[in-house]
Image (tube, rainbow over all chains, first blue to last red; front, side, top):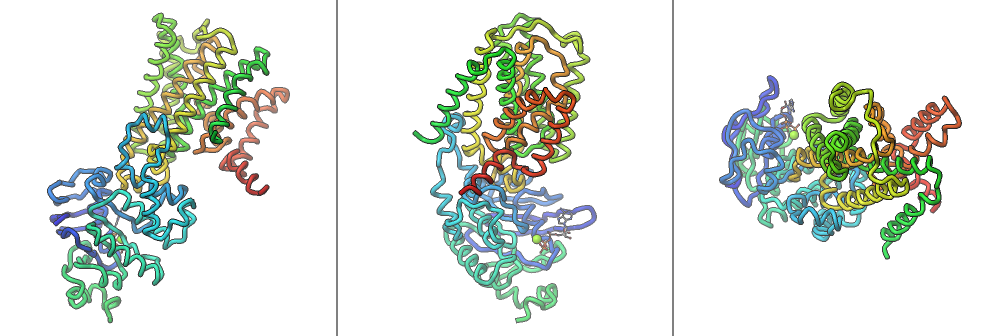
Length: 249
Length: 304
Ligand SMILES: Nc1ncnc2c1ncn2[C@@H]1O[C@H](COP(=O)(O)OP(=O)(O)OP(=O)(O)O)[C@@H](O)[C@H]1O
Ligand SMILES: [Mg+2]
């Protein structure tokens, strides 16, 4: 298990967004986190990535205790993420967005920056990450000018620049058309094959059923079910939570 | 030679010729003032333009630099250069203090807090009479070089050096981190960027540079009164950055030059001067929010 959360909770005022959730993500797996709107998925991801600190519970990345560790420190441990509501550096170019992702790997002494400025380090690697998400041709454009679907892909490239071991994505397929979802699916599998553990929050059941090894279902801030995609599809409690809607097939 | 090199060499030649082209003592003085304003605009631009921190307290650091260096020289008999080092350090430390607010506050809240910071500093300069002489002021301050051309060369040389260093810095990965914080703090943190650290860095360096500019001001005018560091000065610096073009290197330099010379050229208009100045400023913000740099880019795009 690469990530282990035990009975973590987070409330906002009276709202129990995440309540007593325990989760264990196996290394080298693609792990999906699903649940109806407001189930607490994004909140859980924010707790895991350090945007929020939990009110209670324990949280470990392998042997490292994550409680109290701010978000930027968790990145150095190999945790990266994307956001449900896209948060690109909109005024910066695609290449600059990805280059910023290499921050923790920039280890040249400070005086070199003062004397030489741009060292050009990671430029090639940044370009190949842009190529990986199909955006190398637009590397000089401003991120804010990209169509929605490509913004999502850019956020993925930027997060990958941190070279994560655990990559968490919050609804990467939201707002994507069928062809883009297909492309995303392939990329997620490829990322997984490179030895990165993927934790993906998703509403798109096609995607979940196709790429996930395990699925964790949440509802009303609490864990509802965990199993393989097939088991989840046939679990009555899960079907009830979704009112049959997306599982009707 | 690269275009950058050519620009650099040409700028140096122009700077070298300037005090001989503009040889009246009055206008030579304005040249020194202009170089000082360039330093101030550069310092503020690092904080506002590149790091996105709405700082209205820059006049305080300018004042700290001026008072600390002058008091150390006049009351304690320090050598000017040693006093300047201490003054820059003091301003930098105070910048760190303001950064402590910036870590917790954002946008307008930070603007108000930094404004309060400038007001407090101003009040200390007015009221701590044992040390600062208050509104009576400190008189008979000598510049490090008495020849006006030499003083211009000194301040302009420092401005060029600061420009080159900041230019390198913002093109380096440090610049990537600062801009990332400006664009989206949460995203920046999600990439491992320690926003508290880099905000503190920007505030500290910005304050130190403003403090450095402050070291040359008292010797240049010969007297030192708190009013020179009134909060209005913060807004003037802000205007330079905005009129020139925030978040670009050359913008604040152009803004500082224009806003140093414009009021001088408008002197003939007497009382109307401030009004013209104000209207011009409003028009700029309204119609070219990206400042002169943006206007130039738009013009160039149209001519192509
Ligand atoms: N910062 C916050 N302040 C107050 N309430 C919040 C906050 N974040 C989330 N909540 C509440 O917590 C609950 C869980 O929200 P969360 O965003 O985690 O759900 P989700 O499963 O990601 O939903 P969706 O599928 O719509 O993205 C909701 O009731 C939401 O209103
Ligand atoms: Mg969500």
